[in-house]
Image 1 (cartoon, rainbow, N blue to C red):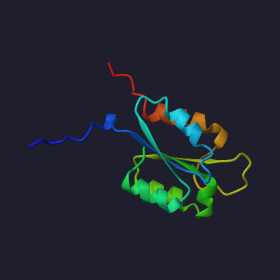
Image 2 (cartoon, helix red, strand yellow; image 1 turned 60 degrees about the vertical axis):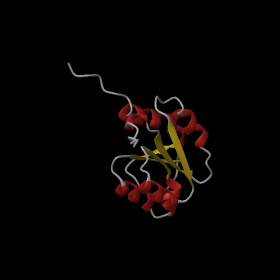
Image 3 (tube, rainbow, N blue to C red; image 1 turned 180 degrees about the horizontal axis):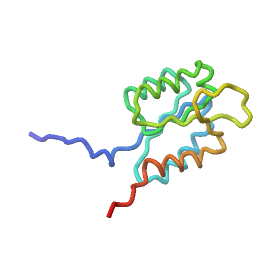
Image 4 (cartoon, one colour; image 1 turned 90 degrees about the vertical axis):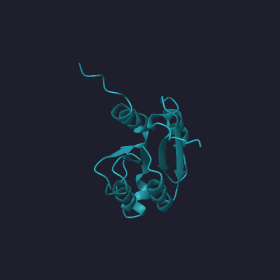
Length: 132
């Protein structure tokens, strides 16, 4: 009898959930995560309900959320994603100068997507130097 052991966590692909209406930032996200040491799978949806279901079934390492979709759902998606799992971050993005109430304490501009993902990588994927 052969027993299959699950792959070590560091060899399983990282899941990135992208929720935006037209997928206009998918190529940018693909390019940014393509340089990561670990393989990455990107799941894109326009539907907040599908995004929440996906996050509950297969928690992503990172969720990238268009703030316009979240405002349209009464800011429920970011709250529900935060409640679904506390092990992943939700980065919310909007266009500069949007005159709306922010759903999250901090909303990035889409032009800051590379910087925001770089910050996230430094925070979560770069190993700290060993203690002496």
